Length: 63
Image 1 (tube, rainbow, N blue to C red):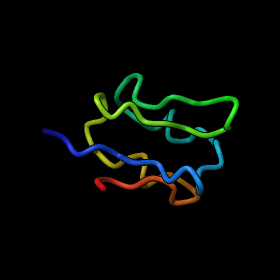
Image 2: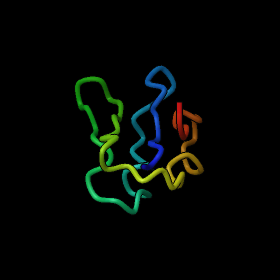
Image 3: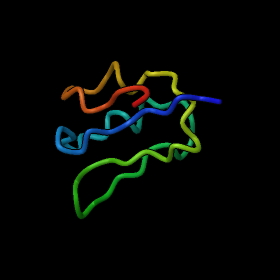
């Protein structure tokens, strides 16, 4: 079982850098109304690439 990335929505600025960095398809969903991202936890493999590129440290691995 994989540990999924988590989004701290209060920190997310909707830059979408994580979307282009993630090697797995359809992990991130951009919510236009909120200008934030959400994670499809069932697809996330927990590699942590998104965590390393987030300029606002809005992403973390695990709980």
